[in-house]
Image 1 (cartoon, rainbow, N blue to C red):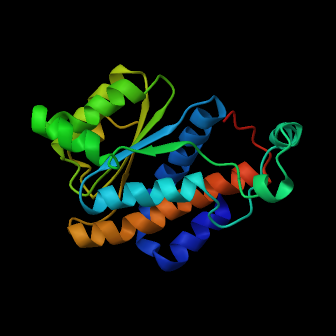
Image 2: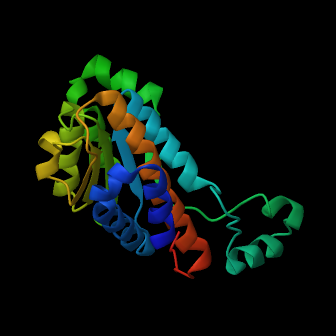
Length: 215
């Protein structure tokens, strides 16, 4: 973890106050994925875009080559799939952005209370041992708070990425990364290097440290 954290602090010294929480978040995600869990992500506006960004970094190669497991190579070859095809795949961290489904979202908002949009998805998709990763600059987004409550009912762990106070979500999070600002734009600017650091550390452990991932 030291190298990734050190690089983060080189450019963002003010984030030293959240380093311990970043480390805790990474370990929590690794523990979940190691046992077959997945990450669900939600947020609004710019934070919704961040959820999509994180999912993209986790599902595909980010900074290093990941490759695929030997057992999967063997299965591809048994099926007669040539190397030039299966070498286009790589290992990843299972992640689902809950902000992505236009058809579901518009149907839900049209028929039901929009505040429970994310909560319904967590209720159906989330399982014990999964991680709900929420992003909210204020920490008070109603639909995010409801999603967190459902996650706790389902036996999931919750990681929050928010602003200085943590808002309402802080009381429910297992780890809450509160960046030291109350200004929305500044908070968002600090969120990106934090989640990039988390994604990089997860990838390094996936590839370089021999962690056995069940996916």
